[in-house]
Amino acid sequence: MPTMSQIESQDQDPVFQLKGSMLAITVLELARNNLDALDRQLAAKVVQAPNFFSNTPLVLALDKLPADDGAVDLPGLMRVCRQHGLRTLAIRANRIEDIAAAIAIDLPVLPPSGARERPVDPVETEAPKKIPEKPPEPVIRPTRVITAPVRGGQQIYAQGGDLVVIAAVSPGAELLADGNIHVYGPMRGRALAGIKGDTTARIFCQQMVAELISIAGQYKVSEDLRRDPAWGSGVQISLTGDVLNITRL
Image (cartoon, rainbow, N blue to C red):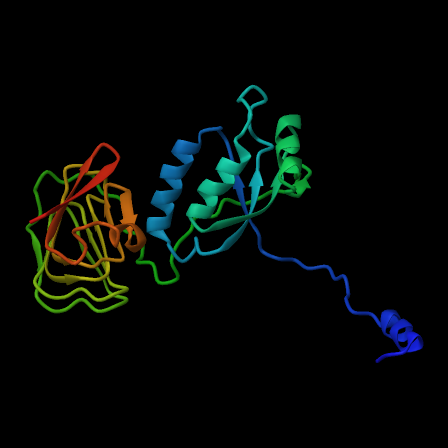
């Protein structure tokens, strides 16, 4: 058993150090108090760059909100961010009601920043080169047909039309189409139809075991899809309003 002198000697030995650090922290600057719109817009960003939104540390900047914009539901705001992979470390605020809401849930409050912050456009590390915008073409492009299996890491895009895959789609693969997507094999990757906003687009799968499905920016991930009775079956997926409908073929 240690003696009193040994305990006192151990207490004098330093067990920690305080150090400065320049860590990269993402700042989400809220311009309007609208959680529903934030949820939808973050979802669209996640589809574009899912790896960027993976346990990303975040400072919520509320100091640019109009003074008369109403109190922010701070727990609800943090919940929306957390659902999309953003982990709130602190808020930046100057309105009394926002500061009080943060104190109530023991969230650190930072003062408004005078530093210039550059906007961040989340992209994947292997994102395809941006194609220069062209005027809309009246001619509909023919359906793109893929007969070979689509491996993980591959991205197939059917611009201006439908995409048909007559093979299996592996986990990590990504199918994109301006129109419909048909998969005549196990669909284990990600399928994004109507990516330019076509809400009438549909996804057809012979066997739905997908990581993600999306139509016109509305999406479901595998955690949601696994709870659907049609998981693993042949299905068609359509969009009604903001709701994805999954029905058996």
